[in-house]
Length: 193
Image: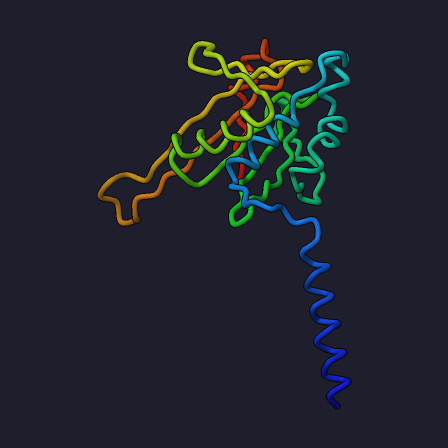
């Protein structure tokens, strides 16, 4: 009986050790995970843009940081806007994501719980680790990374009204126009879940 119990303990410890393999040494916030997904969305500068932002290409670049819902992309209305949704996972929290466009992906949209300054600090941490540079571009930010086509980044904070029946709660929307010159992409109705 003791031998059987000892074998069970050894097997349980081995399984626990195997389950821990490959886990990150540090915790990652949903904001940092969104930052890495934003970086992954940028196309290499030498790729032809129509091919670089095709649904299949963007999906393969984002396959690591983003989990997509199994359903095929939604085709909404006569404007032929195609939308695909999923989520980005941090250590303890996740963020919703949507990819929108027509023949190609034009915009990525993320929704995170938290105030804009907190979310932006988390995103900047992943940008700094990867060498991404943000520069002002009107109300938006130009997102640049060496050897990659730049994107256009916009953030908005929404909060419940003070004095409403709900507890005060804020969330931040992050939008990326995959082509910096395609400012109209930020006007697409592309809300992340």
